[in-house]
Length: 219
Image 1: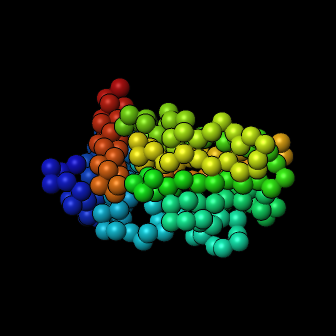
Image 2: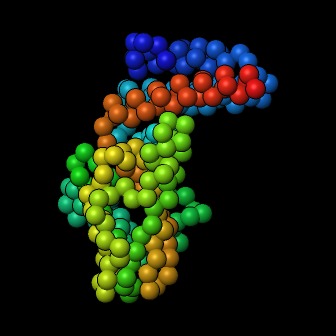
C-alpha cells in the first residue's frame, strides 16, 4: 500500500497494485491479482460511504444487511435490540443452504439480539466464523462468541438474549447454529463497527496477499 493511506485506493491504483504481481506461475499470478482487486474494491466501497445496507468483513466479503419488518422473521424491539424468530424462519424454509441477508449488529452502539423459538426451550447458540482473516492475525477466524456474556442457553424459556456486541470482533461475520428441544437451525450475522478500523484491516489484507505471493513464488 502507498504511504498516503486508504485515499490512495482508486480503481486505477488497484489495477496497478495487482499488476505488480510478476513472479510465479500464470495461475498463481492470476489468483493473487484477483484477490487483491477484490479487497481493493472493498476498500474503495467503504472509503466512499457505500450504501448502509451493504457491509464488508475483514476479508473483503460483501454482505447485505437485512431490513427489519414488524411481525416478520426479523424485527427490532428498540434501536439497539434486534429480534429474530427462529420458528418463523424454519417455517419459511429460510437458512442454509438457501441464501438470505445477514443481520448487521452494531458493536459501537452495543447492540444485542434476542432469538426466540416458539414451542422450544433450552435454546443455545454456537458461532462459526465465516471471515477468514488468518493471514492478518485470525481474530475473527479463531473467535467463539462475538458478544459478551451470552448465556449458555435460555433455560425453560423460549427466548435467548445475547450479551452486548463485542467491539473486538467488529467486521467479523458468523454462521450461527441454534440447538434446542425443538431441533436446530442456522442463520448468519455480521458484527459492524468503526469503518476506519475496517479500512486498516482491509489494507493489511492487501499487504498480506502481496507478501504471501512473493513467498510462494520464490519457493
